[in-house]
Each structure stands twice: as C-alpha cells, then as structure tokens.
Image 1 (cartoon, helix red, strand yellow):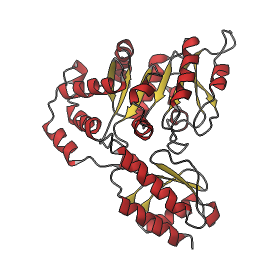
Image 2: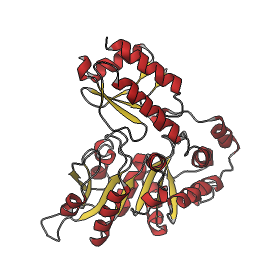
Image 3: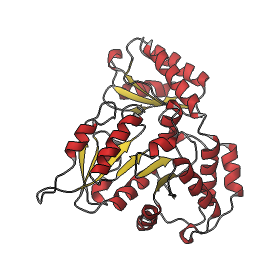
Image 4: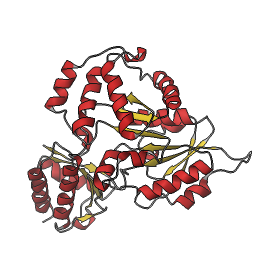
Length: 340
C-alpha cells in the first residue's frame, strides 16, 4: 500500500526502535527520566528557547499553550483554516473557555493589519485578546510556508499590544529546510512553539512545546491536569532524539517527491493542482475528471494508494520518508488510468 494520507503514518526507523529498546528511563513526573530530559534540552536548543516539554500529541501541545497563556473569557486570534480552529474539536473553548476570532488568510498567511485591527480595545463589552496563534507550515493551505517577514510583522504588533504569540509549528522543520532559514529565526518571532516529532521527522509518537522557563513551569501543571504526566517516558523520547538528530535534513527529499508528484499529476487530464507546493503536501482537484474527492480516492484505493479528502473535489497527498520516488511514479501512472 502506498500511503499518502499523512506524514503521521511513518513507521519508526531501525535506529529509533533500537534507541527505544536501549533507552535509559526514569519517572518523568519526578523529573527523573534522563532520555526525556535530553530530548527536551535538545529541542529547546534547536529552537533557541529557554525550556521545552514533551507532550503526547501536537493537539495537546497547542491546547496547553492556550490554557497557559489565556484566562477563561478571553479571545484568541487565528487564521480561519488553522489546525487549532479546524481540527482540534473546539478544545480551546471546551477546555480553556476562550473564543476564537478568525481571520481569512491568503494561503494561510494573515494580513498583519487585519491582525492589528482584530486586537480588542479595553471595553467592558468585549473579550480581551489573550493570544495570537500562527501556523507554519499551514496544513489546509497545502503545507504553505508562512514567510518569516510576515511573522516578524505580526510579532511586533503583538508585542506593542502586550499579546503573546503561539506558533503551531507541527511541520516547522519543513519550512526551515525548504527555505534554508534556521528554525531559530522562526521561533524567535513567537513566545511559544509546538512542533511534532511524529510527522515528517518520523518518530512514532510525541510533540514538543517550548518557551520561557516560567512558561514551561506553568505548562507542566496543565499537562498534568490533562492527564499527560508521563512515567518511564524515555522509551518514547529516545526515537524523538533520533528524529531531531538525523531526520531533519532529509525532509528535502519529501519536498522533491511532492513537487515530482504535483508535476506528474498536473499532466493528467481532468486533474489540477490546487496549491503552490512549498513542502510535502499536494492538493489535487478532481472536478475536471468528473469525480468527487471520495470517488477518486476509492478508485485510488483499488490500486493500493491512499490519500485524504480535503473537500468535495479536493484530495490531499502527503509525502514522507516511507514513500519512495518509484512509488510516486506509480501514483502518477495509476492516476492517469483513472481519468481516462
């Protein structure tokens, strides 16, 4: 099966499995797991932040950020199709008691002036703006890279208004590799960052949230409240260390495969590419082939190819290290047969 549903389906490498087997462990709730402490220290250093904390998932990391930054009754500003707004079960409202204020972006990029105008005035009728959330790369925009200059503008606006910024950087290393910009430069335009170990980096589980020492101290309590306190977590932290130390540069291969896939599918009659392929996600429109996204995916599945529906006539195909260039060629060939 050629699985292009997501880069979350990657299997741990042999080195990751061996590292998990040999990991030194301790009780993380007591702060005694040496492997997890090494992972958190490595992650903080890579991002240029004072401290970092391992969390079981990116969604939990984002929610911990909102819970730590905000008070119930506040409002957070975020892009209208951001993952936090679109795919996290309204947990910012269910858990943190905050309401979202969405801004329609351009390929996931918010206009700084619109962000500025969305920050609430000091008025008894209005909620206070508690947080601004960015997403880089942007999932629903097809893995689009939010330009560093855009992040800088929004960060300056946020600081001038005393509003913190959280970055959902689930695929932030994809942006760094694609642009050649150090990940620290992106992280510097934020107060807190979350990134996933279990997507393109290939670890079997886990994400990192990073920020100041004081922020992480408060965030640990929220992680405990949410049931995320871990015990001998070195077994799952060890693959994460392997991911950070060995899997970042190879993300460029995923980007090359995604462009190859997009170029090939663009030549298939009835199909069109719906995004600028910045990183490892390709959005394919099937309307010209007279097929809905689900119909096209069903046909692909008959050829042992998996993808995700991203709308009535749009599918998402995501490259990762378990998909080879040869398999990408097979996908292009089979798609060509389906539209004839």
